[in-house]
Amino acid sequence: MEGGRPSRHEGVAPLDTMDALTQLSFVVHAMLERTAAEHDMSIVLARMLGILRDRRPTVNELARLLELDKSSVSGLVARAERRNFVQRTPSADDRRSVRVSLTEEGRRLTTAITAEFGAEVAALLSGLTPRDADALTRIAGTVVLSSMHRHGIDLSQVRE
Amino acid sequence: MEGGRPSRHEGVAPLDTMDALTQLSFVVHAMLERTAAEHDMSIVLARMLGILRDRRPTVNELARLLELDKSSVSGLVARAERRNFVQRTPSADDRRSVRVSLTEEGRRLTTAITAEFGAEVAALLSGLTPRDADALTRIAGTVVLSSMHRHGIDLSQVRE
DNA sequence: CCAATCTAGTTGGTGTCACGAACTAAATCA
DNA sequence: TGATTTAGTTCGTGACACCAACTAGATTGG
Image 1: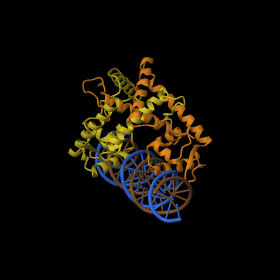
Image 2 (image 1 turned 120 degrees about the vertical axis):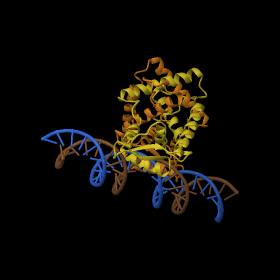
Image 3 (image 1 turned 90 degrees about the vertical axis):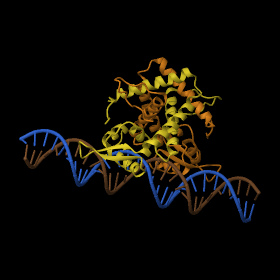
Image 4 (image 1 turned 60 degrees about the vertical axis):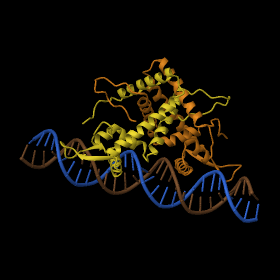
């Protein structure tokens, strides 16, 4: 948890696995936060827009995807709608539910943020050898997939 | 940004670098959040306690370490003090400033959370071959250090 | 050596985002 | 059809984030 403690033996202490992973996650998180902030967005909002790039979920589905309470998502969508990033469309088959989708402006913004963030990630990894960069991608992918698997994930669900 | 999009060609799409890294960071972040939440803490609070494990910084130094405004930290410390996790000690040399340190209870909790989180990280990586686990640790460490370097970091600063 | 300036920390105002509980309206079940 | 479940919103509360304004203590330069 928030390692980054310096060794007192000059030079830099090699990070143990937990610290390295935690710190890496903070670095990426902070990067995403900065990128989003440049467009006056929070991470959660950016995340939601990212999800909406190729989905038109209901509020409930969105809540599952974001692992948030539906009341939280309701507010999130309301704020996003106020800013013209998303729109709510009454669902055809179930008159209780609503489909959330990107507006044109939302899509534009999402594309821009994705590109900027991608560039930052690239810069972050620019110091690695191609071998290591590939290895990181591959191993991170493995971990993520197995984690989803462990949490009993659907995936390839939720589409309209 | 928040990939996790399924390929429509059956099976699982290999994640590109940006997605893999982002998702990994979300997975770790969520793990930390759950672990902290089990002790009724936020990530930020847990992070601060982690920092305090071997430091007695002032509010200002804490703000720099956490990359937060000092007013945010002021409140954070106040809430933590109310819950008996930390204590404020007037600084000896500068009567304006305050040193923040863990209480016994704070230390106990920090140790517990660190252990639990470490176990979760281990579980997360349990599916990897030892080779890959080592590679991940090493590469993540490299990225983190170079990122700190790029942001012009001190490190091995701030101690009392 | 003291007035001007800077720095440390707190306080207060505002906004986002999290939650649970209570509620409406629509669907489903029995 | 009446009872229950489900989708979504609203409301109240709390943690955190920021900035701006403020107090009190340090520092500096004439």
